[in-house]
Length: 433
Image (cartoon, rainbow, N blue to C red; front, top):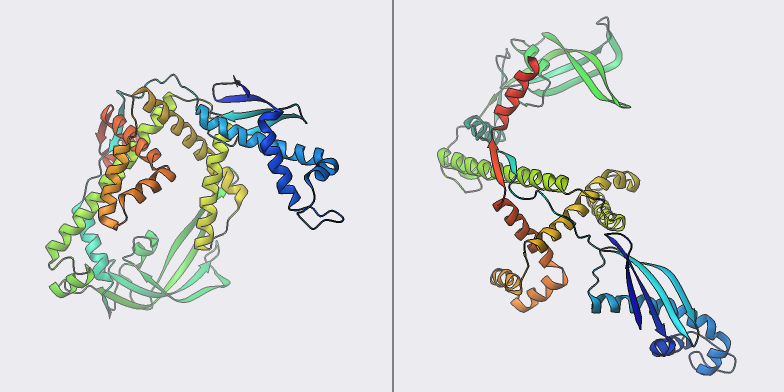
């Protein structure tokens, strides 16, 4: 067998392979045996026709059909023996088969390009630090207590801790009622932060029978421009109820905390810890994404098209499965358009990651997999050997490699912490000036 690898571009290679007929003779004979099982000839039961008769009648067709399968198998044999590492689906672009002489074929395939890496260490990347506010804790407590709230009829709306029942009438530009646009007995919780601020403000100090108006602005995209439409409404107050939160007794706290806390202060500590954990995770996620985006920008290159398509197909399949699971509409064309940029970024990052690992001698060793397997075996009862086998088959080493590269990058770059609220306030003041 004669093989020759040609480098077309940095990420696209092709291999030319020539085999003499004797090298594929066994595969050709196997092809005849397979075809014999399917063919019936006069005077012979199905699958019992003599091979020589098959060769005489169908030899050329059978061998030409087999040649493509043989080429495909030989290519993957070479991939294993030469460690070629194609990253997307290879393409058979040329096939020349001459019976009793030779089989020649050419396969084009993509590989991870070797990059001239730059600027992936000693970077300064902003990292938001979200501050926990005690008012957030109080709001969370109120929301939980609100699920056990009672309601007392009242004569006047004195603050936001009220629920009102209204009749809603749409008005035209001259403040006249629009026929057929009236809704009755609508219930509005004024303490809900999602309620239109105008409704909250204009409902204050109102009594049963009073009226108040508000404006609703529908904002949506019209082509490439933001289109705003304003609608006017008048409300008639029919019922007012004060929201009365229950006393946070030990029994109630234990109930709403699923028996995780017995006192209000203990419950607040738990909520505080949950907020802190969430904020820390969000901060780390934003910092990591910013760091990786900067590294990809600093080492930008044209990602192999076939590899991008491979990742895109996977992303689309995930979206399709999610749509099926949650019974939501799915448009594959729209999904592909929407996910293409993400697929391209993922392809670039994966290639950069492997280049960094190679340059910095970061590897996944057998001991890394074994350590994880032993920890998981202790928790699940599955044997370490079975878990190791599963990890290797499912390419767990790839995720571990990414974890190691991320740890290296975070250790060799600087996080510049900032308060996002302070930054937003400064930017807002800058715009006003």
